[in-house]
Image 1: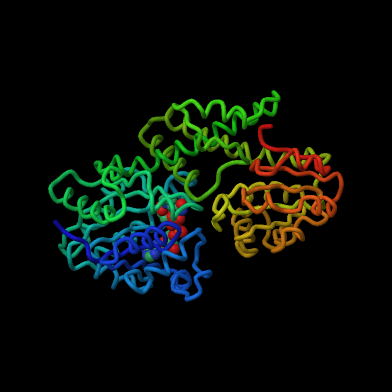
Image 2: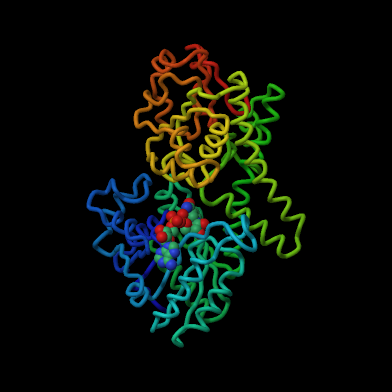
Length: 464
Ligand code: NAI
């Protein structure tokens, strides 16, 4: 049985970086090299100052400190790393296509294909290729075809090993996964490759937690897991609107249904809507696959999860406008939070971006405070929507690095991310410095509504 000594991971992003850091930490005898085309990203991963790592995850810095330079390396020398490795993880981005067939729905597999071609060109020894990126079911077939037709006659085995970590809790998820899923070809060679990867994980994950399946089940399971998770959010959000119309309280409803062991208590928090790079992209991808196969009812069913999420974001923004006497033009609206969830600096598909865009259409003056997101990132996010010119975006969207300054003089505060620190602020001081009436729109239901109302705020939460 093959014992892996050298691993390469292509893509040093939110998944490649933390996953490989933990793999290297737990396997000191395996050399792990993470490569990326993005020179700045690699330089940041190599920065002696650990606060400069390109992504923020609680606990990541310690793991990097322990393994980096010992058996964990970050590099831009992609060819060399491919050459050396016996096992290659592909962890590049797979965004939604923005052009051509499947535009706005299908996954763009351009980066995956480029990786496959590069591996084929460079490899002179047999390799196990591991799909770490989230991919449409049947992608392994395409990768195999490219490798076999353009390679140097060496043998490739393809495995699917989707990543289930959640941003913000990536390090504990990786150290203690609910399960590790490995799919591969059900041949002798395929099973050997699966076993080689099982052995890498088995140094820290219990065998009972490592599932092995055929490759298509593994690829599909990742899309399905994200679809189910997002569906729970949209389901409770749909109920939140019903609660607001009926004086039911969504938190009480969530608790009541969550105690049913068939439903379970987790992931039932109503909010302004889900964000993140994955949920929307992966559901759209699932919908696209279903449509391509002529399964229109299946496609419509899952698409509704996205439509509900869009509705929830719009509803939140529209409610701010109507509550502020139907005009927010020239009014300062302060945002607490821009990241798509707490404990991450990732802003991809964050609800904050869409709510800001909607309010900027109404010519509101937005000032944002987020403990981990930079002004440059926020401008980039809003410019990416292409709704108005960059100079107009600059004019309507400002960033403050001090929360009290961000909230000073505001007509309304909108909570868009559930950062814990928001609960610890001196809300009396904030109230004193705001325009009156002082409105709070709590898009994450994190603030103490009763306390705030005692101070004098007018508070609107989700589903209450
Ligand atoms: P990311 O965008 O943070 O990182 C991808 C990296 O790949 C970038 O740094 C990019 O420069 C690099 N790259 C692209 N093409 C390359 C090439 N040919 N050679 C070398 N480097 C190349 O993306 P992220 O968030 O890490 O996602 C990666 C995959 O993992 C996606 O398929 C995503 O759906 C999946 N995933 C993401 C999760 C998350 O929480 N972000 C969780 C689970 C899966």
